[in-house]
Length: 621
Image (cartoon, rainbow, N blue to C red; front, side):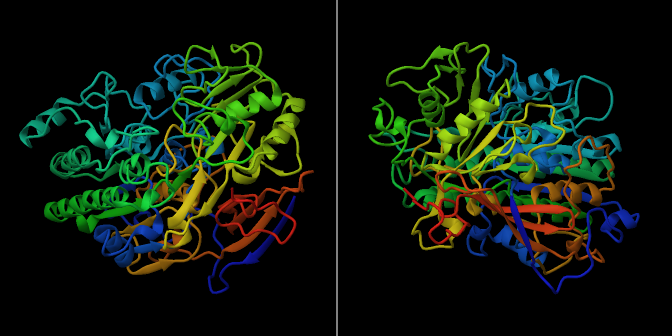
């Protein structure tokens, strides 16, 4: 592996490696509050005063984090785990939205590859992994243990993850939790105090459904054309009319997490572009979702003003990831040459990675989401996931399907099978970069998981291979990151939206902050990430927790009054060349010991990586 580093900004001074002195409220005794607002899937360059006035105001009057980073794999639960703990994914074990747990999860539908955006599933995984699958304390737990008021409101899955070990049935302080499941059998129970406040405010005790926003369509039917307005209006009302007044009355500091499903939900399910790359996620439905999230933030800020809390409340806005338009095109995939009832001709089917690996490795394929039914003929796995081998109960290989990247697990750590799998993956034009578990050894064309902080103290099984899919910029007339397109292993269709890749379109999330403990009108040019959000939130609230793992973000000291401004460096890391001329390349930035990952893959197949002249395969299609 070759590495090179160059100075990113010679004008920046004083190297910093994490917790530093002179930082905000930790150095004074003024009680502060914190709101962490997550506009799911908001691309950084989509924020303008015209389209998103509330977020633009936070960015322009507060701190503009111009060099932001979602953690790869760029998925919701993964980055939610980073924001909630300050740790990278190698420690939290939340490697994507669907993972292999090495046991059958009943709430997930009796599968070994659960989709974890589900409160009941998270509780089940907690129980299996000694009561805390994250293996790290969250900022809400630390705040609650300190006696602060805490709440998490919004999208099911990542919202609950912020205080997933809280048990409302036990004595003591509890977080207020509202998500899609509230009022149902799988929802977190509401206290009598909260129920009374809801009734007084004229709000129902159960979260309304998403309605038409949840309609994804199919190969012949477009998805939604409306944003998630009604459900998010409820969440915003709960925060503004119930939770914030309640917290003010308690007269003690609070931490409130608001996870806006939009624009993610509207971009995923958009019906503006069925089977067409254009307009993709830049159509009117996606823009409506972006405006919806902005309206929610505006309502929260208005409530802070009316309650007299604005002067004592810090606000961090950080999207979990960027977004891309889906492509289902490949010239090399055997599965794309098969006819399926639910897939347009010559398009990649859902589960194409599992199908192609089963063929290349000559292994039987079974569906872990359909009672391990065997996949044959013109069938594909129902959820895309696959278990490969003669015995589905003891598979040789497991594929956890996610979207812009997939996870491959080798339960027996078979190095010979790893070699064959890597060779098969390197032959597909939809692959752009491979990352392999260090314990399996080094392989030409791949980089080790440790280079991207995916190998740490995780309680859940670590993937053997992380497969990044091809991405490029379409001709959408905007900045390349706003025009990002990616091959995605998903039930969603070409022209709809996805994320999860190592494209700069997916890693470039929107980040900004404002409040009494942030600089005003400050443009932060050095790299920051969602792991830094978790560490900075803890610092602002004076929270201290025990760390099991060492893959920790840094406090964004440069954004705080009197804070240390660190130097930053840029670098490139490259694998050895594979036999067929492919090389995984990683664009990295560094601040002290912290590493930030811009984009990775095979140059010419990943948005953000320029092709090497003559040495690298660059086919887009």
